[in-house]
Length: 333
Image (tube, rainbow, N blue to C red):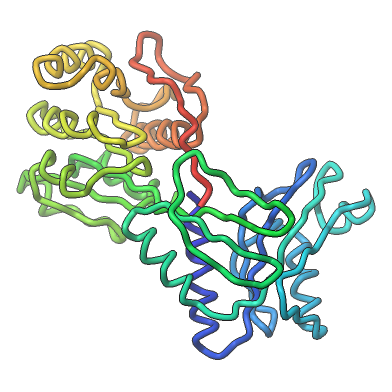
């Protein structure tokens, strides 16, 4: 998911509570090389202040100019950009791209509270906007759903933040945590070993001293969750893998060489895991970037997690690596 959209909704709610007029602008359709996909969201305040993006270019400037000149729509309405090559060039839409938007006044924020609360509980929800009446309804959504607009009703998805659970609190884990935070993951690190957990110092993360397998069960991993085991201690790493590989987590990986990965899989066969579940394990973890330092290894790990999240084939892997197929798990939200 793109949690930027959730940040946009939270800011729009706060502006509305402060008494500002607010409009939401949603990308509903693109042609050519328009920079932002359907569902991308922007909130605009009455004085022209904006949060979010629908184009990353001059379209935002034009929307701001419209509001400052007094164009303040009272009902949801359609806006088209880039119909001609000249207009596409004017608004920074490359290769003759076109952009179609819905602009709507924010009349109330009850539905925003519901979206934020439910996504915080790791639920996937959809917002239905009826353009004729301006009414909004929130309903459950399913993985595989997509943004839709039939000319009358807009249905946009909002999902929970992507979450990364790191087992082990060493130097590599710190580097991974910083990079994952920059990619807007919710980061949880777990290490019950006192000599490691007393020195964890990465702001913005959650730290746990629970046993890894207990924490996995408590977190209730979902398809927006990734797990990496990097303690170098088979007792801890294997414990978390036993539970994580049975979960819906979109990525489960463990640090180790190809021979260590093979030995780990043999150990996992001794427990109640199916061959298909064991085959989900990514190992050796990370893409083959020639990494040597902890920071370089962290880049390779985070790059692989990103590729799997986005449904991209893992071409940059060492020969003989365990390499589950990319499944296209990305959910617009």
